[in-house]
Length: 455
Image (cartoon, rainbow, N blue to C red; front, side, top):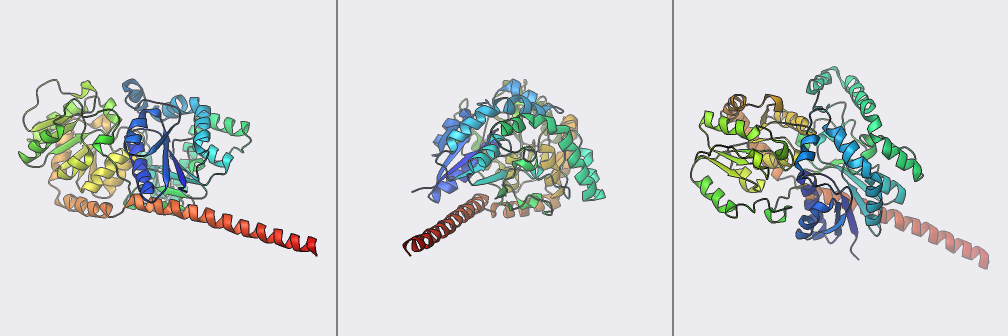
């Protein structure tokens, strides 16, 4: 009988694709993976050959007005948690509780707040995952907070200062998760750890689905943490909605453009930030013109991202292209710093200019810059002049180019999906061994009791 693995996640494609990669690897190993997330992704998941279970909230990640609010520089994360996720916490809990029936193990994403509650209530074996180093909240390798990136400098004063900063962050956000504590009390569970911080981590197994190149310390990681490497999946045919449907000749047009001249610089904002682009593409076009370089713009479905003036022949525009097709053939990549986009750029072995907007993006930008493969411009400073200056420096830096190639080889060799599946299988084996030992003890006790009675 195939063992069922329930994987629950929430968010944009960067929060979905790694779990499709994980599910595909599990399926190849003979398991029955089920992805439980917003109904918006049902068709995409099923096209990938993976079973699907809907879990509320059923949010459309292509809702322009919502995405613009979520990328508010000050309140975006609070809006996501307090206005999108937690108002439907009970519905999420009920949906996931139902989906868990018959599953052998539960895999959770940091923003699936119902997951830890279901795991604790049902006693199902539980593996928690994180997609970016920010979620570790290490006092030894402080995260970069979007609003106050300068607080990263406290790291120089040691882990005591870092610990104080993290405790302050917990204090500021504690009221956000009150609905979670209330639900836990109603169903007979203790308050537990802060669900935004330590409460998201399984005591049994925590998987960091990113490259160990992005972290420096493991002193204060959650127990039983394993950093697996990135998990990659970006098949064009299996993406939600037809992102290239307005241009059926996109693959052919891309190939003709790439063959007509030197490698271009690719400008992209991922799958969600692209809906809150502002003047990013206009400034990017002007930066490319200033430098006289070839460029590819990946503008998504928002018509506001299409420049008003006709583009010159050395700048090509597409709604969507799989990163695995275009990134390896780029000269450099300008992107928002989402962990999925960052992973693809690292895998391609290309230097990058990161323009972080919100969430984990400033932290990811810091880490790839520290790695020696990137430069960073914060969103409020991004202009044609500034981008041109940074790109000119980046493209002429042979040390950075070589370092990016070296990092690309390392990332391509990590095989994150296989490592993550190995960890999940280990957890299942532990469960089986514990069950067998329990059965043996109970069987032995029954035999002794029988002997005593018969004697």
